[in-house]
Image 1 (cartoon, rainbow over the protein chains, first blue to last red):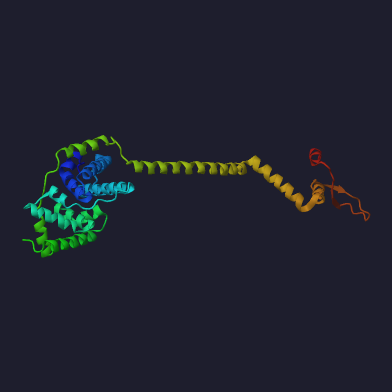
Image 2 (cartoon, rainbow over the protein chains, first blue to last red):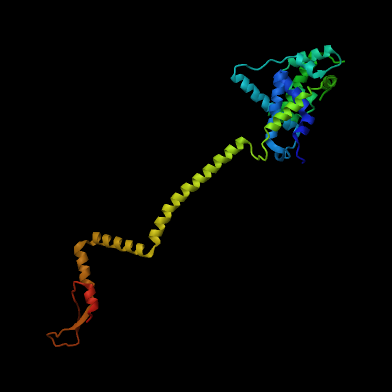
Length: 163
Length: 148
């Protein structure tokens, strides 16, 4: 497999990682910082080792997931705690049919648990497979699928019958 | 995926990502380039583990060489002909003296000289009778230099 350069990785997955980190950390600034740390982490592996990565997309999301966890650990050490999900960030990241639907999507995602929201976002907006989602979240593919289905059921309840 | 999930999924597909801040790419890549370890094969954590393993190997080799050196000295001492013979002679002599005592050792010294035939003329007139007599000598070396 051809070794992937960092700029190629960013062009392929940088925006998706930024959206994922923003929804996970509930902060645009924190997402920027953690995205930089993610690419620092990817750079440490070097091109020679990155060529052995079978699924670069899942690997990049896994690195982002780990860096977000490290960020939260640092925050908890300083007693800042985890930030609650901010629904208004959804409209900063996604453009819907209208402004109302963007607000509703934010409210619907806020009604999910963090694990369900992560599974739904990775599956629906970033098009990861269940196996890749399991690799990112360190759970089995079945667990990832279960989280996704519970999350989708709650979204369906929230939206009612989508038109 | 059932129909409800598919409908909800189709509804979510109506949302498209907005473009991210353009300066973010430069920031992320600049940070990554600054931290890029050129030609580095192992991560810092792996380097630490490798160093710990190397220290363990060197330490075990050192201890092994010390122990095997002692063992080798013992073996050399035992396998060396002169030293081993002296050791065995000393051991046998001391153990023999312990076993049979000093008197028995003197008896053995009495028996050790070689016998010589001496013709004795018995009273009954038989002249072909030889009796083995043992000459008592204090020093076996003197005896060996002046055989009869």
